[in-house]
Image (cartoon, rainbow, N blue to C red):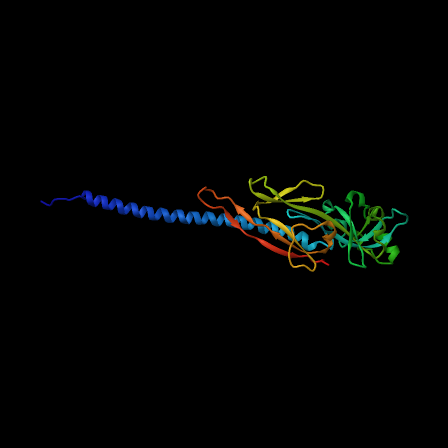
Length: 286
């Protein structure tokens, strides 16, 4: 008769130890990969945040005209950028004379809700004279503007009537700097960017965007405490944290130091950081 033998106690213990080792190795590998994936997700989120913040500020800065930066602080940047630029083709009489202006596409193609003011161009030095002046005060309509410009310049405006618009009270807003016939006028937006404590991800910082006369909106969260703005003056090589009002027109580049930080999900893990710095040359710098 054949006898059936089972595992001995020693064999069972050896099998248990070996299976435990295999389980530990598999679990460790899984945890390491899981931690790596979580780290990559946090890093990607940090990267996306600072990239989107950079793109937003870059669009405003690269379109701004000379003198468009009106506040230059370490964590506050206010910039004015064009909504539309046109040429004056006719002006009324009197001290408060209106201006009829030719804009490509006219008011229909403007984001009039963004307009914060008006600026006149000085052809002698290329500078702009800015004045906060609400659109609802300037808006003089388009009904007769093209006809007046056609009479004044003998231009054919038959199929381009929508490209003309009347701007009211510019002489009151700009005084002696108000543009005359043939000179340029700009309608601009004013946007303030600040780095402040986040409302969505405390205790982190965040980038806030605030259009003129509107409430600030948190745009990019997870900004590290090292984040700041820097400014370079024409003829200099280093960047400053703050520029006084008298030197604002001499800024020729802005540095965005928008380091990001993502808090780890475990107290045993380090936070994920992502260093990000870029220098933006201003298109209309002196």
